[in-house]
Length: 152
Image (cartoon, rainbow, N blue to C red; front, top):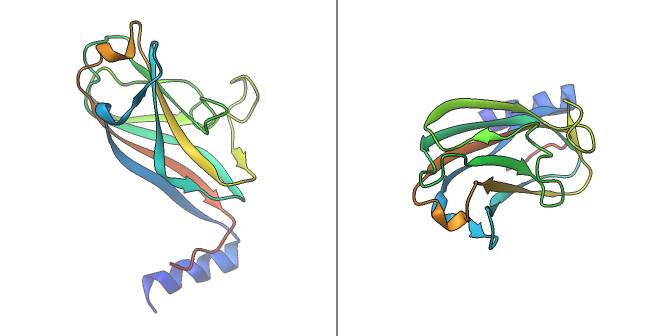
């Protein structure tokens, strides 16, 4: 039995599986919001019928030029839906972990329900204009429970 078949059988029997959206990101990929923030929509999306558990960030190169740079992970309408608090991205660090934000206004730690396909949006905010950030690279992972069998 192939590993793909094993995954499908696990999903069929348990009804869920853990998946992730992951991307290696350079500071230059962010779109300047003409203020202190820059945003980036990740390529892969979180499918409808998922529960986001949280996120992990590995900052390979700190976002230099602004020593207060922090990052939220959201869905474009709620900037921190997939990260309860911000990730410090101005210094290199591994395994920066955050729970998902289950409540409105960032008040509850828990699973974030995704009822329609969600675009993961990263927002980096500094203390000065976003253009002051002159370097940076990170790998971001958003972990979720899927209720849909993935056949590919």
